[in-house]
Amino acid sequence: MRRSTVRSLLIVLLVLAAAAGPTHAELSERWQKMNQPVEPFRILGNLYYVGANSVTSFLITTPDGHILIDGGFEETVPQIEANIAKLGFELEDVEILLNSHAHFDHAGGLARLKKASGARFMASEIEAPILERGGLGDDLLGDEAPFPKIEVDRMLKDGETIEHGGMRLTAHVTAGHTRGCTSWAFEVEDAGESHLAVSICSLSVLDGMKFGEDPTYPTIARDFGRSFETLEALPCEVFLASHAGFFRMKEKQEKLGEEGPNPFIDRKGYLKYIDRARERFKEAVAKEQAGGDGSGGSSRSS
Ligand SMILES: [Zn+2]
Image (spheres, rainbow, N blue to C red):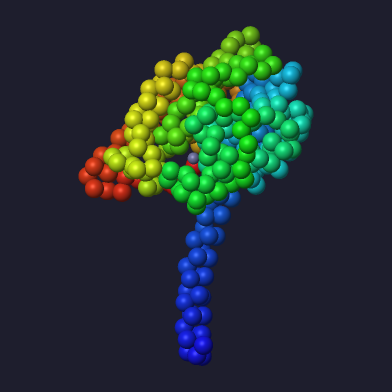
């Protein structure tokens, strides 16, 4: 190879590296911001928070072993494990592992958590294949955002329930964000009263979603529409979700212990979140119909 050719190639490589460098650093920085450690705490009754500042993880304790919803990023696992221990419980006692949806920020830690706990992993039958593929072949992201594959031990139909240790959790498929996006509903006993908790999967519209004619996910618009209705129809009192910001966790956590009702009992906030999500969805559809990119100004993950 001629000297000048080598130099041109080097320049091209350097330019490419410079272009890739900041982008990559930016992404990981963004993930890091969503993965800051927070003190674990009791939300109410036998329901505890054991996740990071943005990507959530909920522990439901029972005398027959515990239930854990979502595993954060793969890198969140040490935090979840430490948080469970700080609360006086053990990861080894987690018997059932659940997931909101097959994105790396909520499913990334599941395989490690399953291995460490020996828990059985249960997921909606629609989301199961992509969880077992480790996120490959995602309708929107393709193979861009893989995570460790996790074997599904029990597949659940929409509306099917899991009974364990006196708890009864219903899997509501609230699709759109992903095909099998699952919101979990369960009653929590606190101070002699029972409250319906719902952990919303996600109603976020992501960059690149197409609602008119999406060849990879043709029913996306109908699914979003149905999910708003499904969630609105649930008599939810304790509002939870896959991201802490969706239900203003920090604000509520700071109010815990004050006089009055538990701040996590927030039906108004729950309905408001659904309402806003529906507005953003409508805006994205309108923008797409008007020839925009259909992103509605949202992000590509979460
Ligand atoms: Zn997501």
